[in-house]
Amino acid sequence: MRLCAIILLLCLISTLSQADGTKTQLFSDLSDGLNVYRYDWDVETCVIYVAEMSRDNPTLHFEVALGKSQVLGKETVRSMAKRRSQRGDRRVVVAVNGGFGVLGDIRGYGGVLENLHIQDGELITQPTDTEACFGVTESGEFLSTPVQMKASIQIGTYTLPLGCINQRRLDGCQVTLYTPRLGESTRTNRRRGKEVLLSGLPFPLTPNYAHPYQVEKVSNDGNSPISKDSAVLWISSRIKDTGVSQFNPGANGKITVSLSPPEWNRVRHAIGGRLRLLKNGKINQKLVDMHLKEKKHTPGKRSQELNLSHEPRTALGYNANTLFLVVADGRQPKYSTGLTLYELAGILIELGATEAINLDGGSSSTFVVNDEVINKPSGQQEREVLNAVFITMDIK
Image (cartoon, rainbow, N blue to C red; front, side, top):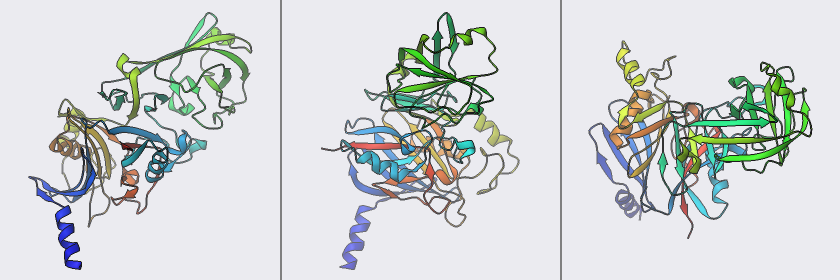
């Protein structure tokens, strides 16, 4: 009986030698158009997990999720995946961790993302690293062109540029809109600006949004509560324009938000990372230059320069036919030492990707299949992260 089980296992796992390593097929019965495998990279000691999703299978989808369903919340990838599957329309088959942001509870901002997040058509945070964003439209079109937010708040005769949505005040924005998706309150400091409570705005906020509002209250106290049917506009005290004085209780105005190029306004799910790895099949020149200037390359060596350091990594890539989700384990010398970003980009090219962005790495790097973590996170346990990326499958 034991021999039969071994033979069956060998039949299910096919091993294919590559020029730079070995691919071991995993979970061969997941779904048509979905390929999951372990890639042992022989150039250096690194174990990589890869999911390849065919873009031609209409039952497979790209989605993102937010920890605890709000910005000021963190959750494990596995927990987010289980929660998504419980909705009943689709099942999460593969999930990896998402983008960068505030993992520690810095002044109550643990969970804040630093780049784009669009979920089920809701614009939750705006793009910052505009080159390192990826989105999918309702029709399944993949987008990774540079994207920017164009937004403003009009009040009376005055128009104020809107810089951020659901971001920390410390992240440099002079004007920030806080929606109910942030959390219970703005967590702002009363000495740094005023806050304007806006009512009459329908939610969710979408990438193409234009609606009137009414000013309910103006406060200088900071940390304003956010109700489910209102938003809070934070205006830095550094803005000295007299037009700001037109924000008074009872006043009316209009908020306008859009993404550019215009095709981004049709995005259903999107995520932002940090640094574009591949564009048109070529490695980011910044990574190439850093790699060439490195005086001595030592496999597995960690460095203060994170781009050159061997670390656990997570990336998203694609080509005309396939979406790739990639997690490289690291910080475990006898098992897997991790990759530099240049090495990660090169492996993505080897796998077939032509476009790719870098997602959060380190102890956050997590690869989940069918509700089980199959990689070895460097922190020895699954970490709570800010958001996640899913491959979901329709439930028949």
